[in-house]
Length: 195
Image (cartoon, rainbow, N blue to C red):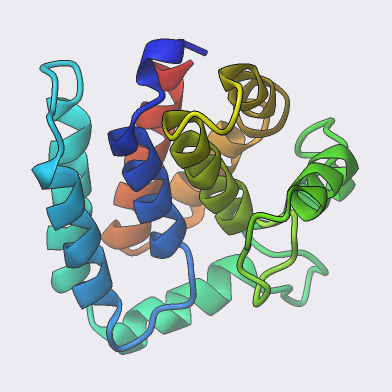
């Protein structure tokens, strides 16, 4: 992980993608636009422009989708079906259980829960949403000087890069709506660049 990428833009982009992966709700469009405006106000280097444009592309695609279709696709992708597994598991433990990766999420769960950093309790601790939100908050703490950047590096290397790009590949392959494909594409590109 390149320590130069630890910035408020990284924090905001990670939070943006986390919000894209919650169950679609009526005000989601406004929240995504709000997060984009926060990202836009940051001092953006030339190396970040591509990722900012990708965030805008995700919003534009979202606006072209019907909320009913987004909700149906969300359920189809992320909930257990008749085969006994989701099309795209959202939890690290499910990825491990279905042999899509060899990764033990229990250490990350312990780190997240012991940190005292608030997480989305509507989701299991090992959900991709909580990993991204937690990473976003770690970046903010590092920027304020209250956290050593080594902790961010360790969390990224041990708990993000080893399964979330695989999650993105799975999501891209199994999604039928462009919104979820754009989220998968943008998030994976950002994580790979961050690495």
